[in-house]
Image 1 (cartoon, rainbow over the protein chains, first blue to last red):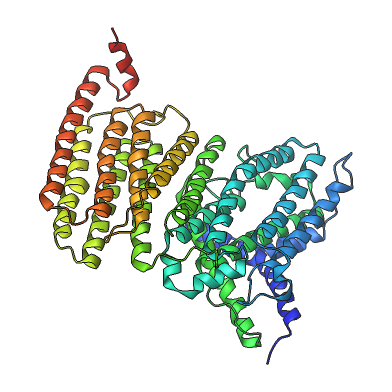
Image 2: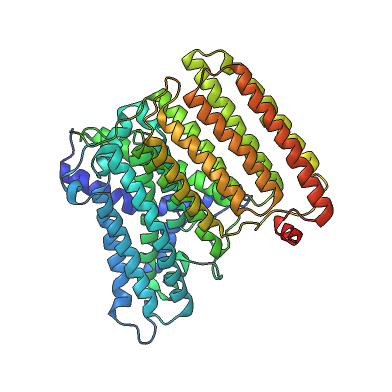
Amino acid sequence: MTVPIPVVQLLQVLTVLIAAPGVSGVIARVEARVQGRRGPRVLQPYYDLGKLFHKEALAPHGATWVFLAAPLGAMACYLTVPLLIPVLTTYPLPLGYLGDILGGGFVLGLASFVVAVAATETGSPYAQLGASRAKTFGAITEPVVLFVVFTVALITGTDLPYALAATVRSSAEQIVRPAHLLAAAALFLVILYETGRIPVETHTGTNEFGMIEEARPFEHSGPYFAMLRWGSAMKQLILFTILLNVFIAPWGLAATATIGAVGIAIGALLGKAVLLGVVIALIDNSFAKLRLFKITEFVAAAFLLAVLAVFTLYFGGG
Amino acid sequence: MNPAVSPPGIYAGIANGLAVLLLLTEFAMLRAALLRAQVRLYAAQSLLVSILAVVVAATRHLPELYVLAGLSLALKVIVVPWLVSRMLRRTTTEIAGSGALGVASEVLVAVAVAAFGFFATSRFHISSPALPTTALGLGVAVILVAFVLMVVRRDVVSQAIGFFSLENGVSLVSLVVAAGMPLILEVAFLFDLLVAVVVFGVLMQVHHARSESLSTTHLTRLRG
Protein backbone atom coordinates (compact mmCIF):
# COMPACT_ATOMS: atom_id res chain seq x y z
CA MET A 1 0.00 0.00 0.00
CA THR A 2 1.43 3.36 -0.94
CA VAL A 3 1.32 6.63 0.91
CA PRO A 4 0.34 9.69 -1.19
CA ILE A 5 3.40 11.82 -1.97
CA PRO A 6 2.12 14.98 -0.20
CA VAL A 7 1.64 12.87 2.94
CA VAL A 8 5.26 11.67 2.71
CA GLN A 9 6.30 15.30 2.43
CA LEU A 10 4.25 16.14 5.50
CA LEU A 11 5.72 13.13 7.32
CA GLN A 12 9.24 14.52 6.76
CA VAL A 13 8.26 17.66 8.67
CA LEU A 14 6.31 15.78 11.36
CA THR A 15 9.18 13.32 11.97
CA VAL A 16 11.56 16.18 12.68
CA LEU A 17 8.96 18.09 14.71
CA ILE A 18 7.94 15.19 16.93
CA ALA A 19 11.19 13.26 17.25
CA ALA A 20 13.55 16.20 17.89
CA PRO A 21 12.98 16.56 21.68
CA GLY A 22 13.27 12.79 22.03
CA VAL A 23 16.70 12.75 20.36
CA SER A 24 17.81 15.50 22.76
CA GLY A 25 16.45 13.40 25.63
CA VAL A 26 18.43 10.33 24.55
CA ILE A 27 21.63 12.38 24.25
CA ALA A 28 21.11 13.87 27.73
CA ARG A 29 20.50 10.39 29.14
CA VAL A 30 23.63 8.90 27.50
CA GLU A 31 25.69 11.86 28.64
CA ALA A 32 24.53 11.36 32.23
CA ARG A 33 25.24 7.61 32.06
CA VAL A 34 28.79 8.23 30.80
CA GLN A 35 29.33 10.62 33.70
CA GLY A 36 28.08 7.99 36.16
CA ARG A 37 24.76 9.72 36.88
CA ARG A 38 21.33 8.22 36.42
CA GLY A 39 20.16 11.06 34.24
CA PRO A 40 16.75 12.38 33.26
CA ARG A 41 14.07 10.29 31.56
CA VAL A 42 14.36 10.10 27.79
CA LEU A 43 10.93 11.74 27.56
CA GLN A 44 11.90 14.56 29.91
CA PRO A 45 12.16 17.21 27.13
CA TYR A 46 8.49 16.53 26.20
CA TYR A 47 7.41 17.00 29.83
CA ASP A 48 9.45 20.22 29.98
CA LEU A 49 7.76 21.53 26.85
CA GLY A 50 4.34 20.55 28.20
CA LYS A 51 5.06 22.35 31.45
CA LEU A 52 6.28 25.48 29.70
CA PHE A 53 3.22 25.62 27.42
CA HIS A 54 1.03 25.86 30.54
CA LYS A 55 2.97 28.73 32.02
CA GLU A 56 2.27 32.41 31.72
CA ALA A 57 4.19 34.40 29.06
CA LEU A 58 5.95 37.56 30.18
CA ALA A 59 7.87 40.12 28.15
CA PRO A 60 10.45 42.59 29.44
CA HIS A 61 9.33 46.20 29.81
CA GLY A 62 9.74 48.04 26.52
CA ALA A 63 10.09 44.97 24.32
CA THR A 64 8.12 45.27 21.06
CA TRP A 65 6.22 42.73 18.96
CA VAL A 66 9.55 41.54 17.51
CA PHE A 67 10.34 39.89 20.84
CA LEU A 68 7.16 37.80 20.77
CA ALA A 69 7.20 37.10 17.02
CA ALA A 70 10.74 35.70 17.02
CA PRO A 71 9.99 32.22 18.47
CA LEU A 72 7.18 31.79 15.91
CA GLY A 73 9.44 32.95 13.08
CA ALA A 74 12.25 30.61 14.13
CA MET A 75 9.82 27.70 14.43
CA ALA A 76 8.46 28.45 10.93
CA CYS A 77 12.01 28.36 9.54
CA TYR A 78 12.75 25.02 11.23
CA LEU A 79 9.51 23.61 9.80
CA THR A 80 10.51 24.73 6.29
CA VAL A 81 13.99 23.15 6.10
CA PRO A 82 12.81 19.49 6.36
CA LEU A 83 10.92 20.07 3.08
CA LEU A 84 14.21 20.72 1.28
CA ILE A 85 16.45 17.90 2.53
CA PRO A 86 16.21 14.11 2.19
CA VAL A 87 14.72 13.20 5.56
CA LEU A 88 12.90 10.03 4.54
CA THR A 89 13.14 9.46 0.78
CA THR A 90 15.87 8.88 -1.79
CA TYR A 91 13.75 10.53 -4.48
CA PRO A 92 13.10 14.27 -4.39
CA LEU A 93 9.63 15.21 -3.21
CA PRO A 94 7.63 17.92 -5.04
CA LEU A 95 8.79 20.74 -2.76
CA GLY A 96 12.34 19.34 -2.53
CA TYR A 97 13.57 21.64 -5.29
CA LEU A 98 12.21 24.72 -3.54
CA GLY A 99 15.76 25.41 -2.42
CA ASP A 100 19.24 23.90 -2.65
CA ILE A 101 21.77 23.43 0.17
CA LEU A 102 22.46 27.15 0.22
CA GLY A 103 18.71 27.84 0.40
CA GLY A 104 18.41 25.55 3.42
CA GLY A 105 21.40 27.30 4.97
CA PHE A 106 19.78 30.69 4.43
CA VAL A 107 16.55 29.57 6.11
CA LEU A 108 18.51 28.25 9.11
CA GLY A 109 20.44 31.53 9.15
CA LEU A 110 17.19 33.50 9.15
CA ALA A 111 15.96 31.55 12.18
CA SER A 112 19.15 32.32 14.08
CA PHE A 113 18.86 35.98 13.01
CA VAL A 114 15.31 36.50 14.31
CA VAL A 115 16.23 34.94 17.66
CA ALA A 116 19.26 37.24 17.88
CA VAL A 117 17.11 40.29 17.10
CA ALA A 118 14.64 39.26 19.80
CA ALA A 119 17.52 38.88 22.26
CA THR A 120 18.72 42.42 21.55
CA GLU A 121 15.14 43.63 22.10
CA THR A 122 15.22 42.52 25.73
CA GLY A 123 17.79 44.92 27.14
CA SER A 124 19.18 42.03 29.22
CA PRO A 125 22.99 41.92 29.11
CA TYR A 126 23.18 38.13 29.05
CA ALA A 127 20.80 37.66 26.14
CA GLN A 128 22.50 40.43 24.18
CA LEU A 129 25.93 38.99 24.90
CA GLY A 130 24.78 35.59 23.66
CA ALA A 131 23.24 37.07 20.52
CA SER A 132 26.32 39.13 19.73
CA ARG A 133 28.65 36.17 20.25
CA ALA A 134 26.45 33.85 18.21
CA LYS A 135 26.56 36.28 15.29
CA THR A 136 30.34 36.91 15.64
CA PHE A 137 31.27 33.24 15.60
CA GLY A 138 28.53 32.54 13.07
CA ALA A 139 30.30 34.91 10.70
CA ILE A 140 33.52 32.90 10.91
CA THR A 141 31.84 29.49 10.55
CA GLU A 142 30.00 30.72 7.44
CA PRO A 143 33.10 30.34 5.15
CA VAL A 144 33.44 26.72 6.30
CA VAL A 145 29.85 25.99 5.27
CA LEU A 146 30.44 27.74 1.94
CA PHE A 147 33.49 25.61 1.20
CA VAL A 148 31.53 22.47 2.10
CA VAL A 149 28.86 23.60 -0.42
CA PHE A 150 31.59 24.19 -3.04
CA THR A 151 32.83 20.64 -2.43
CA VAL A 152 29.32 19.27 -2.95
CA ALA A 153 29.01 21.36 -6.11
CA LEU A 154 32.32 20.04 -7.49
CA ILE A 155 31.50 16.44 -6.62
CA THR A 156 27.97 16.36 -8.05
CA GLY A 157 27.82 19.26 -10.50
CA THR A 158 24.74 20.54 -8.67
CA ASP A 159 24.11 21.85 -5.20
CA LEU A 160 21.11 19.71 -4.38
CA PRO A 161 21.30 17.56 -1.25
CA TYR A 162 19.44 14.70 -3.02
CA ALA A 163 22.11 14.60 -5.74
CA LEU A 164 24.98 14.25 -3.25
CA ALA A 165 23.18 11.53 -1.30
CA ALA A 166 22.62 9.61 -4.56
CA THR A 167 26.30 10.08 -5.51
CA VAL A 168 27.52 8.77 -2.16
CA ARG A 169 25.25 5.73 -2.48
CA SER A 170 26.40 5.03 -6.03
CA SER A 171 29.83 3.49 -5.35
CA ALA A 172 32.58 2.88 -2.81
CA GLU A 173 34.90 5.17 -4.80
CA GLN A 174 32.71 8.09 -3.84
CA ILE A 175 33.04 7.29 -0.15
CA VAL A 176 36.82 6.90 0.14
CA ARG A 177 37.63 9.97 -1.95
CA PRO A 178 39.38 12.42 0.39
CA ALA A 179 37.26 15.40 -0.67
CA HIS A 180 34.10 13.71 0.59
CA LEU A 181 35.68 12.63 3.90
CA LEU A 182 37.19 16.08 4.51
CA ALA A 183 33.93 17.89 3.74
CA ALA A 184 31.97 15.54 6.03
CA ALA A 185 34.50 16.09 8.85
CA ALA A 186 34.33 19.86 8.39
CA LEU A 187 30.53 19.76 8.47
CA PHE A 188 30.65 17.66 11.65
CA LEU A 189 32.80 20.33 13.35
CA VAL A 190 30.35 23.03 12.20
CA ILE A 191 27.49 20.98 13.68
CA LEU A 192 29.33 20.75 17.03
CA TYR A 193 29.50 24.55 16.94
CA GLU A 194 25.92 25.09 15.77
CA THR A 195 24.36 22.79 18.35
CA GLY A 196 26.36 24.38 21.17
CA ARG A 197 28.43 21.37 22.18
CA ILE A 198 31.84 20.96 23.83
CA PRO A 199 34.53 22.12 22.77
CA VAL A 200 32.62 25.31 21.93
CA GLU A 201 30.00 25.63 24.63
CA THR A 202 28.73 23.77 27.67
CA HIS A 203 25.34 22.42 26.72
CA THR A 204 23.85 22.07 30.17
CA GLY A 205 25.20 25.15 31.96
CA THR A 206 22.72 27.58 33.47
CA ASN A 207 24.51 30.85 33.90
CA GLU A 208 28.08 31.39 32.95
CA PHE A 209 30.26 33.68 30.92
CA GLY A 210 31.07 31.18 28.19
CA MET A 211 27.50 30.91 26.97
CA ILE A 212 26.70 31.56 23.34
CA GLU A 213 23.58 29.95 21.90
CA GLU A 214 22.07 29.03 25.25
CA ALA A 215 22.12 32.60 26.54
CA ARG A 216 19.84 34.02 23.85
CA PRO A 217 16.41 32.90 25.12
CA PHE A 218 17.12 34.03 28.72
CA GLU A 219 14.28 36.56 28.79
CA HIS A 220 11.63 34.47 27.04
CA SER A 221 9.12 32.60 29.16
CA GLY A 222 6.14 30.29 28.96
CA PRO A 223 5.02 29.06 25.51
CA TYR A 224 7.50 31.38 23.75
CA PHE A 225 10.40 29.84 25.64
CA ALA A 226 8.99 26.38 24.92
CA MET A 227 9.00 27.15 21.20
CA LEU A 228 12.60 28.34 21.31
CA ARG A 229 13.65 25.15 23.14
CA TRP A 230 11.70 23.00 20.70
CA GLY A 231 13.21 24.98 17.82
CA SER A 232 16.76 24.38 18.99
CA ALA A 233 16.04 20.64 19.35
CA MET A 234 14.65 20.67 15.79
CA LYS A 235 17.68 22.53 14.51
CA GLN A 236 19.88 19.83 16.06
CA LEU A 237 17.90 17.02 14.38
CA ILE A 238 17.87 18.90 11.04
CA LEU A 239 21.66 19.31 11.11
CA PHE A 240 22.07 15.64 12.11
CA THR A 241 19.82 14.67 9.19
CA ILE A 242 21.88 16.72 6.73
CA LEU A 243 25.12 15.12 7.96
CA LEU A 244 23.69 11.59 8.03
CA ASN A 245 21.33 11.43 5.06
CA VAL A 246 23.41 13.57 2.72
CA PHE A 247 27.04 13.01 3.71
CA ILE A 248 28.03 10.04 5.84
CA ALA A 249 25.21 7.46 5.86
CA PRO A 250 22.52 8.00 3.21
CA TRP A 251 21.28 4.42 3.58
CA GLY A 252 17.95 3.16 4.88
CA LEU A 253 15.97 5.87 3.08
CA ALA A 254 12.71 4.94 1.38
CA ALA A 255 13.09 4.35 -2.37
CA THR A 256 9.31 3.94 -2.84
CA ALA A 257 6.25 5.41 -1.20
CA THR A 258 4.98 2.21 0.45
CA ILE A 259 4.03 2.34 4.11
CA GLY A 260 6.69 -0.22 5.03
CA ALA A 261 9.52 1.64 3.29
CA VAL A 262 8.56 4.98 4.81
CA GLY A 263 8.23 3.38 8.26
CA ILE A 264 11.67 1.80 7.95
CA ALA A 265 13.07 5.16 6.84
CA ILE A 266 11.67 6.88 9.94
CA GLY A 267 13.16 4.18 12.17
CA ALA A 268 16.51 4.27 10.34
CA LEU A 269 16.76 8.05 10.61
CA LEU A 270 16.05 8.01 14.34
CA GLY A 271 18.48 5.13 14.90
CA LYS A 272 21.24 6.93 13.02
CA ALA A 273 20.51 10.21 14.81
CA VAL A 274 20.72 8.48 18.20
CA LEU A 275 24.05 6.86 17.22
CA LEU A 276 25.44 10.23 16.16
CA GLY A 277 24.09 11.67 19.41
CA VAL A 278 25.99 9.01 21.38
CA VAL A 279 29.20 9.95 19.53
CA ILE A 280 28.58 13.62 20.36
CA ALA A 281 27.85 12.78 24.01
CA LEU A 282 31.18 10.90 24.17
CA ILE A 283 32.99 13.92 22.68
CA ASP A 284 31.20 16.08 25.25
CA ASN A 285 32.63 13.96 28.03
CA SER A 286 36.18 13.58 26.74
CA PHE A 287 37.16 17.15 25.90
CA ALA A 288 37.35 20.39 27.82
CA LYS A 289 35.51 23.52 26.78
CA LEU A 290 37.70 25.92 24.83
CA ARG A 291 38.25 29.42 26.12
CA LEU A 292 36.07 31.85 24.21
CA PHE A 293 38.97 33.34 22.27
CA LYS A 294 40.24 29.88 21.33
CA ILE A 295 37.06 29.14 19.38
CA THR A 296 38.73 30.75 16.37
CA GLU A 297 41.30 27.92 16.48
CA PHE A 298 38.50 25.35 16.38
CA VAL A 299 36.89 27.13 13.43
CA ALA A 300 40.30 27.44 11.73
CA ALA A 301 40.63 23.64 11.94
CA ALA A 302 37.21 23.18 10.32
CA PHE A 303 38.10 25.76 7.66
CA LEU A 304 41.35 23.90 6.93
CA LEU A 305 39.46 20.64 6.33
CA ALA A 306 36.91 22.30 4.03
CA VAL A 307 39.57 24.19 2.04
CA LEU A 308 41.67 21.04 1.61
CA ALA A 309 38.56 19.28 0.30
CA VAL A 310 38.22 21.90 -2.45
CA PHE A 311 41.99 21.83 -3.15
CA THR A 312 42.11 18.06 -3.65
CA LEU A 313 39.11 18.31 -5.98
CA TYR A 314 40.55 21.17 -7.92
CA PHE A 315 43.95 19.60 -8.47
CA GLY A 316 43.40 16.13 -9.75
CA GLY A 317 40.03 14.71 -8.72
CA GLY A 318 40.47 14.04 -5.00
CA MET B 1 29.29 17.80 -20.34
CA ASN B 2 28.82 16.78 -16.77
CA PRO B 3 30.60 19.39 -14.64
CA ALA B 4 31.08 16.96 -11.74
CA VAL B 5 34.63 15.93 -10.82
CA SER B 6 34.75 12.16 -11.22
CA PRO B 7 36.07 10.07 -8.32
CA PRO B 8 39.71 8.96 -8.58
CA GLY B 9 39.10 5.26 -7.94
CA ILE B 10 39.45 3.31 -4.72
CA TYR B 11 43.24 2.88 -4.71
CA ALA B 12 43.89 6.52 -5.60
CA GLY B 13 41.23 7.64 -3.11
CA ILE B 14 42.87 5.74 -0.24
CA ALA B 15 46.37 6.91 -1.25
CA ASN B 16 45.20 10.52 -1.48
CA GLY B 17 43.40 10.14 1.84
CA LEU B 18 46.63 8.98 3.52
CA ALA B 19 48.52 11.88 1.92
CA VAL B 20 45.86 14.31 3.18
CA LEU B 21 46.25 12.87 6.70
CA LEU B 22 50.02 13.47 6.41
CA LEU B 23 49.35 17.11 5.59
CA LEU B 24 46.83 17.37 8.47
CA THR B 25 49.40 16.07 11.00
CA GLU B 26 51.78 18.74 9.69
CA PHE B 27 49.08 21.35 10.38
CA ALA B 28 48.48 19.85 13.83
CA MET B 29 52.17 20.44 14.63
CA LEU B 30 51.54 24.16 14.14
CA ARG B 31 49.35 24.19 17.23
CA ALA B 32 50.81 21.43 19.42
CA ALA B 33 51.29 22.85 22.90
CA LEU B 34 53.25 20.05 24.61
CA LEU B 35 56.69 18.61 23.83
CA ARG B 36 55.32 15.12 24.00
CA ALA B 37 52.42 15.93 21.66
CA GLN B 38 54.84 17.36 19.11
CA VAL B 39 57.00 14.21 19.17
CA ARG B 40 53.92 11.96 18.97
CA LEU B 41 52.60 13.88 15.99
CA TYR B 42 55.92 13.31 14.24
CA ALA B 43 55.77 9.59 15.02
CA ALA B 44 52.19 9.44 13.70
CA GLN B 45 53.17 11.24 10.52
CA SER B 46 56.09 8.86 9.94
CA LEU B 47 53.76 5.92 10.52
CA LEU B 48 51.46 7.30 7.79
CA VAL B 49 54.42 7.46 5.38
CA SER B 50 55.23 3.81 6.16
CA ILE B 51 51.59 2.76 5.65
CA LEU B 52 51.48 4.61 2.34
CA ALA B 53 54.70 2.88 1.24
CA VAL B 54 53.16 -0.51 2.13
CA VAL B 55 49.97 0.36 0.18
CA VAL B 56 52.02 1.35 -2.88
CA ALA B 57 54.23 -1.75 -2.54
CA ALA B 58 51.23 -4.07 -2.32
CA THR B 59 49.22 -2.63 -5.22
CA ARG B 60 52.08 -1.74 -7.59
CA HIS B 61 54.25 -4.82 -6.84
CA LEU B 62 57.39 -2.98 -5.79
CA PRO B 63 58.87 -5.32 -3.15
CA GLU B 64 61.78 -3.03 -2.24
CA LEU B 65 59.26 -0.55 -0.85
CA TYR B 66 58.46 -3.06 1.92
CA VAL B 67 62.10 -2.79 3.04
CA LEU B 68 61.86 0.98 2.91
CA ALA B 69 58.61 0.95 4.90
CA GLY B 70 60.18 -1.32 7.52
CA LEU B 71 63.30 0.81 7.81
CA SER B 72 61.35 4.04 8.05
CA LEU B 73 59.04 2.45 10.64
CA ALA B 74 62.01 1.39 12.77
CA LEU B 75 63.88 4.67 12.46
CA LYS B 76 61.26 7.40 12.23
CA VAL B 77 58.42 5.92 14.26
CA ILE B 78 60.49 4.33 17.04
CA VAL B 79 64.15 5.41 17.23
CA VAL B 80 63.96 9.13 16.46
CA PRO B 81 60.94 9.94 18.69
CA TRP B 82 62.50 7.83 21.47
CA LEU B 83 65.85 9.67 21.16
CA VAL B 84 64.18 13.09 21.13
CA SER B 85 61.97 12.39 24.13
CA ARG B 86 64.97 10.89 25.98
CA MET B 87 66.97 14.03 25.40
CA LEU B 88 64.10 16.17 26.63
CA ARG B 89 63.31 14.05 29.66
CA ARG B 90 64.78 16.52 32.13
CA THR B 91 63.25 19.66 30.65
CA THR B 92 60.53 21.21 32.71
CA THR B 93 59.54 23.97 30.32
CA GLU B 94 56.81 23.56 27.73
CA ILE B 95 56.48 24.92 24.22
CA ALA B 96 52.92 26.29 24.44
CA GLY B 97 52.49 29.74 22.94
CA SER B 98 55.85 29.78 21.18
CA GLY B 99 54.19 30.77 17.90
CA ALA B 100 55.00 34.19 16.46
CA LEU B 101 51.33 34.53 15.37
CA GLY B 102 48.03 33.32 16.82
CA VAL B 103 47.15 29.73 15.98
CA ALA B 104 44.27 30.69 13.66
CA SER B 105 46.47 33.14 11.70
CA GLU B 106 49.25 30.54 11.49
CA VAL B 107 46.80 28.05 10.01
CA LEU B 108 45.56 30.62 7.47
CA VAL B 109 49.14 31.49 6.43
CA ALA B 110 49.94 27.79 6.10
CA VAL B 111 46.77 27.23 4.02
CA ALA B 112 47.87 29.99 1.64
CA VAL B 113 51.37 28.50 1.37
CA ALA B 114 49.95 25.00 0.82
CA ALA B 115 47.69 26.42 -1.93
CA PHE B 116 50.80 27.83 -3.60
CA GLY B 117 52.37 24.36 -3.44
CA PHE B 118 49.28 22.85 -5.07
CA PHE B 119 49.14 25.45 -7.85
CA ALA B 120 52.86 25.17 -8.56
CA THR B 121 52.90 21.35 -8.82
CA SER B 122 49.73 21.17 -10.89
CA ARG B 123 51.58 23.20 -13.55
CA PHE B 124 54.32 20.54 -13.88
CA HIS B 125 51.95 17.92 -15.38
CA ILE B 126 53.94 15.10 -13.84
CA SER B 127 52.16 11.77 -13.97
CA SER B 128 53.44 8.78 -12.11
CA PRO B 129 52.63 5.09 -12.38
CA ALA B 130 52.80 4.63 -8.61
CA LEU B 131 50.62 7.33 -7.05
CA PRO B 132 48.11 9.95 -8.27
CA THR B 133 49.44 13.45 -8.94
CA THR B 134 47.35 14.90 -6.10
CA ALA B 135 49.71 13.11 -3.70
CA LEU B 136 52.61 15.02 -5.28
CA GLY B 137 50.86 18.33 -4.60
CA LEU B 138 50.15 17.20 -1.06
CA GLY B 139 53.81 16.20 -0.57
CA VAL B 140 55.01 19.63 -1.73
CA ALA B 141 52.40 21.22 0.57
CA VAL B 142 53.79 19.16 3.51
CA ILE B 143 57.30 20.47 2.75
CA LEU B 144 56.13 24.09 2.53
CA VAL B 145 54.03 23.86 5.72
CA ALA B 146 57.07 22.35 7.47
CA PHE B 147 58.96 25.51 6.48
CA VAL B 148 56.14 27.64 7.89
CA LEU B 149 56.32 25.58 11.11
CA MET B 150 60.05 26.23 11.43
CA VAL B 151 59.57 29.92 10.72
CA VAL B 152 56.65 30.71 13.05
CA ARG B 153 57.38 28.50 16.08
CA ARG B 154 60.11 29.95 18.24
CA ASP B 155 61.21 26.91 20.15
CA VAL B 156 64.01 24.47 19.41
CA VAL B 157 61.84 21.36 19.56
CA SER B 158 59.21 22.55 17.05
CA GLN B 159 61.97 23.68 14.71
CA ALA B 160 63.75 20.33 14.95
CA ILE B 161 60.49 18.40 14.47
CA GLY B 162 59.65 20.73 11.56
CA PHE B 163 62.95 19.78 9.94
CA PHE B 164 62.38 16.06 10.51
CA SER B 165 58.85 16.24 9.14
CA LEU B 166 60.18 18.05 6.09
CA GLU B 167 61.97 14.79 5.38
CA ASN B 168 58.59 13.00 5.60
CA GLY B 169 57.29 15.37 2.90
CA VAL B 170 60.33 14.54 0.77
CA SER B 171 59.64 10.81 1.27
CA LEU B 172 56.05 11.32 0.08
CA VAL B 173 57.22 13.23 -3.01
CA SER B 174 59.80 10.55 -3.76
CA LEU B 175 57.10 7.87 -3.49
CA VAL B 176 55.20 9.71 -6.23
CA VAL B 177 57.95 10.66 -8.66
CA ALA B 178 60.40 7.82 -8.05
CA ALA B 179 58.71 4.88 -6.38
CA GLY B 180 61.23 2.54 -7.98
CA MET B 181 64.21 4.62 -6.81
CA PRO B 182 67.20 2.46 -5.86
CA LEU B 183 66.90 1.41 -2.24
CA ILE B 184 70.42 2.54 -1.42
CA LEU B 185 69.46 6.18 -2.12
CA GLU B 186 66.45 5.99 0.20
CA VAL B 187 68.61 4.45 2.91
CA ALA B 188 71.14 7.23 2.44
CA PHE B 189 68.32 9.77 3.01
CA LEU B 190 67.29 8.00 6.19
CA PHE B 191 70.83 8.11 7.56
CA ASP B 192 71.02 11.77 6.62
CA LEU B 193 68.01 12.19 8.88
CA LEU B 194 69.90 10.45 11.71
CA VAL B 195 72.75 12.95 11.34
CA ALA B 196 70.20 15.77 11.56
CA VAL B 197 68.74 14.19 14.70
CA VAL B 198 72.17 14.14 16.33
CA VAL B 199 72.89 17.75 15.36
CA PHE B 200 69.49 18.98 16.55
CA GLY B 201 69.81 16.87 19.69
CA VAL B 202 73.09 18.57 20.60
CA LEU B 203 71.52 21.95 19.80
CA MET B 204 68.50 21.25 22.01
CA GLN B 205 70.59 20.03 24.93
CA VAL B 206 73.19 22.81 24.80
CA HIS B 207 70.53 25.46 24.36
CA HIS B 208 68.47 24.11 27.24
CA ALA B 209 71.54 23.81 29.50
CA ARG B 210 72.60 27.39 28.80
CA SER B 211 69.32 29.26 28.85
CA GLU B 212 67.05 27.00 30.92
CA SER B 213 64.43 27.30 28.19
CA LEU B 214 63.62 25.95 24.76
CA SER B 215 62.73 29.31 23.28
CA THR B 216 64.94 30.59 20.48
CA THR B 217 64.08 34.22 21.21
CA HIS B 218 67.02 34.18 23.66
CA LEU B 219 69.38 33.61 20.76
CA THR B 220 69.02 37.24 19.66
CA ARG B 221 71.35 38.15 22.52
CA LEU B 222 74.23 36.59 20.61
CA ARG B 223 74.20 39.49 18.17
CA GLY B 224 77.41 41.48 18.35
